[in-house]
Image (cartoon, rainbow, N blue to C red; front, side, top):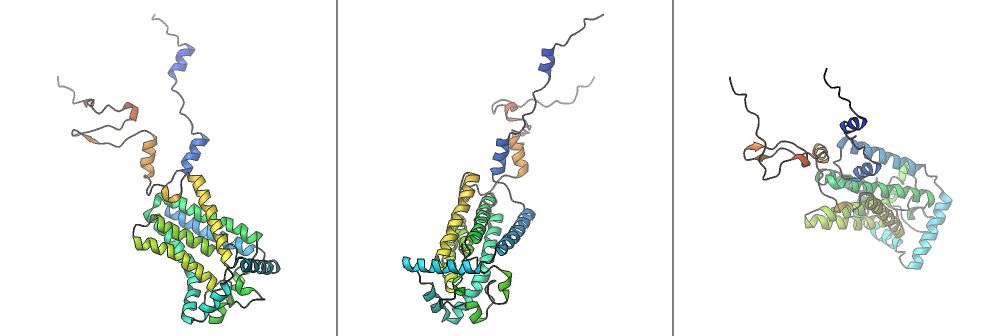
Amino acid sequence: MGDTSVTTLEGREAAVPPPVATETGQGLLRRMRAPRRPRLWFEILLIAVSYWTYSLIRNAVPEQKTAALRNADWLWNLEHHLGIAVEQSVNHAVNSVTWLIVGMNYYYATLHFIVTLAVLVWLYRSHPGRYAATRLVLFATTGVALIGYYLYPLAPPRLMTDTAFIDTVLVHDTWGSMASGDLKNMSNQYAAMPSMHIGWSVWSGLTIFALARTPWVRILGLLYPAATLVVIVATANHFWLDAVGGLVCLAFGYTVARLWYGKLPHALPRRVPHPHGARRARAGVRPPAAVDGEERRLLPDGDRPAEDEPLPARPGPAPGP
């Protein structure tokens, strides 16, 4: 009889391979905060649902007419004290030029959406690594604006009763505002503070200026929010200080993105690796590379031969008898 081998407890413990380390919460958070390639179907769904939710909440805020008109009078008086209450003069001056004010009415109604969506599409196609962070700025900006609509109802200048502001959409019978004419029942008319026309246009302008390469495109990026400011005042849809509220919301959006990603969106890498390549990198596996006519085998970094170490010979056919 042969000797009976006895496996000790220590031997059994040594034979068991060490367990694979589970991903900690900190590691999962780090992965969630890392830039990743956006998915088209998810982005379309996210934007559609988010805008629907934004419109639903904004329009569900009670139209506190008395409070909104009182706040508008207070804001108008404040601007007089600050010496910046020129909205009425701008409104009347631009209204006297029919082609200009009609163009501004359509500008107010359309470019707010067209330019913002166009910038999102451009980011998705040309700057996928920065897309999610820049989109987060936009979403956080819009989200905090909803709080402003609820806490501070404000009538736009055109709805004030004791002033001579002109509602240019009604006067020129143009389709230019969801809060005028036949469309006024579809939108909360007393949600003028903050101005998301300014929040979204400055977001678009800064994104274009920071990331575009063509000089004249970068200049257009800066001119767009400036033109939007003139339009919202000339059409009597906002006060100057509504624009300041929009900038405050945008600053909050950039702060959220900075805290989440650790950098401002434009400082992130333009492109991110493909998910399959990222998984191989996390596993410590490199793709095959040609070395002296031979393919270096896919081995973890610790098991790879040194650069000056010859590759192990491939087994050849067994010698014949």
